[in-house]
Image 1 (tube, rainbow, N blue to C red):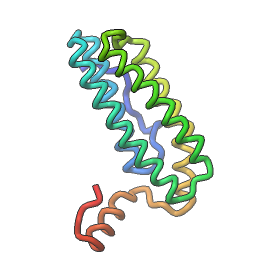
Image 2: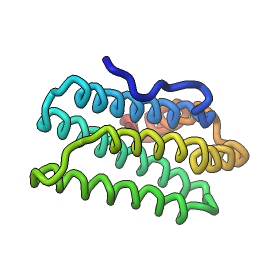
Image 3: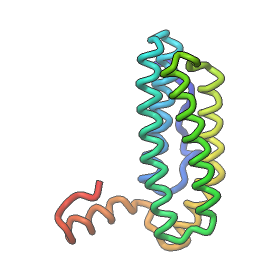
Image 4: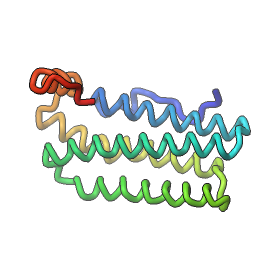
Length: 156
């Protein structure tokens, strides 16, 4: 597979579940890059972009939920960054569906740079805040255990 973006521990925010989600975003971006480089066609590229967009929305919901729960003071600003990216991707998806755009290397570079800057800046700030508030770096394990004890169903 042709790689655009290599995950490194330099991108870690120190919270296992968030890091795992970021790794999946990197993986999806690399799959999209590989599809473009390998000339898999607009349908295949659009399908991967749709997967990337959907996973991004889920990831943003997780982050924003944690921010609300922990009363993160920069929540509104962070949410606005998320909304701006989602709006850009939705506009691109609409153009792709209408045959008015293609997935280019410039787009892939934009997504890579956006993700890198967002993780290294905004995400590290909230992660530091979460950890200062006493959140465990492996919080997802604790949430899952708590949810199973309380309601006997898996949270996610």
